[in-house]
Length: 452
Length: 186
Ligand SMILES: [Zn+2]
Ligand SMILES: [Zn+2]
Image 1 (cartoon, protein in one colour):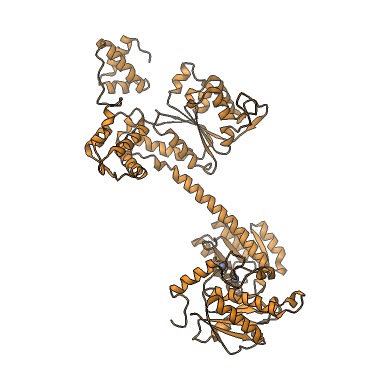
Image 2 (cartoon, rainbow over the protein chains, first blue to last red; image 1 turned 30 degrees about the horizontal axis):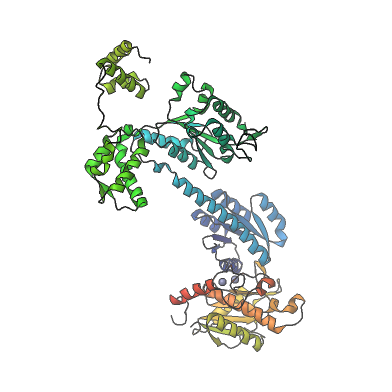
């Protein structure tokens, strides 16, 4: 426990500092001893010590208090214990006001000093444990976990870093399987809320009443089945972050309740009469285009504006195909280990096949496909054969057949509608995809009476 | 086997030295060499403190230690201190050669209790094993019953048994296996 902590003893008297250092070393600390304030400051510049024992009165050069203040300039959190003789106790007390953790009057009772050191080190150990834990958590959901060579994704990584320390609500928009939760976690775990809870709720998965009690908790007897009081996810996330997935799917009633929490940071438990106050950062996600939902009257515009403080649009996998080889190799590495298979590689043509697919289920679907491939793979390298199931399970590029029961005009109309949907109404982009002029596209839009 | 040179400093009873010798021999399976009695440590007297400075005694022990012993242990009846602390029961050089222990505060009469030479000897033995343990590189042990635990009070000292705990023994064994402890042969 003690061995990793270093202590600095600063005293001009050689026997004093050496015997003190020796005594502390017996407790397992790494102790250095120096003879002057100047040397102490130099040592503090090289590293931070867990405790600085500094003699108040050093005849030549900088005295103890000045030394302490210089050390504090280098390490504002440094723990300084001032050593004083009985005659100068008053000065030592004023040293406390200048930021000394403690002062000890020499000669000091051994028990007193060993308890003081033990107390400080205990706190240091706890602080270090917390730090390690936080680093671990932060590492676990580092933005590096989201592999990408795509410039749009790199903009997102940059944005995650910039907003992680804020309290603002974040709206994540992207198709299912694009890694919205991973982005939410990255925001949480790279900010100062990392040590606090991250609570995820899928709003689509629950019926309205259940979701309400899930989010806000309930009082005993508030509805059939509520046999005891229950804390809601908002309370559980207090101090941390709540991730509300599929927010676009919630009922008007819940939209109103949610708006209230966002505005007032307060809510009622289901069946409760007292307000509960929380400090929670909200990260919401949806695969729906909320703006359209607002226009269509399905989503409250005031809630939309509350959620839409910072929006991150996560591109679908088909718009960052360059990431597919990267992701595939990552999944092979992870999954073959997890599944206990000797698969380490993938053939050219198998990779080509994966790159060419559109992946409507995005990264998650790709991961599932790699997993299935690994399970059936007979060698150490995945081949196109291992992905045969993709050709029969729908959605793949290869088995797409043009409709053969429609007038050509209707096919054209549907293709234009689908393309405009994909470009969110951006005519220039849609025209590019369709390989026609913008003016031609405008003509068609007029011709088919399409809304823009 | 570790060779420990043992000597009284000034007026120390032979029975006390015998008990210490036996305890140290058993705790470390050490070879004890009884050295010629050292001078009374008045050279370490501090007028201001009214006690003897153990750091100074340690330095003298080191300077005068015979080359054919691995460690040297001085036993004294005078009260010891280091400048920072109001007293010490003993002092050692961690990973060094010399250690000193004092019976002054281990004697029940110091605390107003009746004379009990056996108790004094038992306490001094624990303290001797403790300080020698430091010279062999052991730091404080969390096992209260182990002589290597930190004792700043008599109660803590009396809670100790004579034998090193398993943890300390294995650390020591490791050091012996790696040949780290023998100074006289190197
Ligand atoms: Zn000790
Ligand atoms: Zn032990």
